[in-house]
Length: 382
View: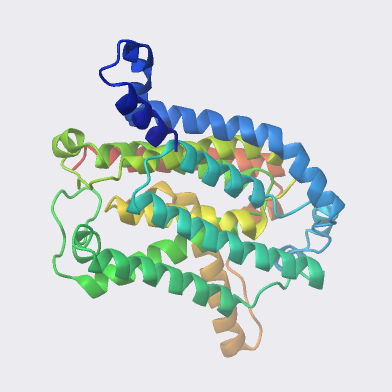
């Protein structure tokens, strides 16, 4: 919005004797300037809106007065009770600030529009799920199959759109992997479409599973967002992309503004979500944030980098898959279900081992930073 306004003013004042006074508006042409503006705007808005939204959620009694099934089964009742009554659906704050800041500072293109679409759809799905949990007061929420089908349909729509659009078709038909500068496969549309769906759906659910401790999900989200801040900027800069031998994607640079807005919104939310949390993001925040990472990775032609950068999210998701699969297998074979971890997702396993909540969160941050460094190393090690 500000980009288009600044360009109109520059065009209007061109040739006029006082036009030089508006020359500073040329700064809005630079992605770096607009990214900084988006981050600052999102942070300030989060600080300003945070207390108001938290108060509003409390008035509506949108608090988590139920125990998570995993925690209930794992015997963390004492810790859960201390969190009861804390407002959930705090993802409303993240999404509202993120969307507004992006629209204000970004130059709108297909990449920005697809990313914002995925954020809004998944946020709506998460809101519906959180609301269902509050109404039921059981933590049940939306049936898992319904959530999964909505995510798959959204991801399939995005994948097919990219595939059928001439300018973005290669994002689907050419398979790129980290540490290798050439496509691993070409004209592999169906395989590429499957990767797109897995990236968006998997990332969305992985962040959702990580959201279990104060500040854990949003802190890891911030670290991954910093990684994609660099990747989107480089992917949208033809000289940098050519030098680093990474895929150049026209218009991908505008996603840098989105990532910057996400960092600002995330920092603002962490202000209220750090231990002891004043608000939880809920599925309203975790589903769209994870989905956004998935689609950004696809749009810059680096879907597998997400697996590295979001290593903590991957570990959390894998721990749940392994725990659930092994439990069902052993119950069917031996009559009694057995567990690999003391509790899943993985962060609860370490809580059961006696780690304090703040220890788990901080150590997962450190692990996430290590994954981020490896992901950034893929830019040069090719």
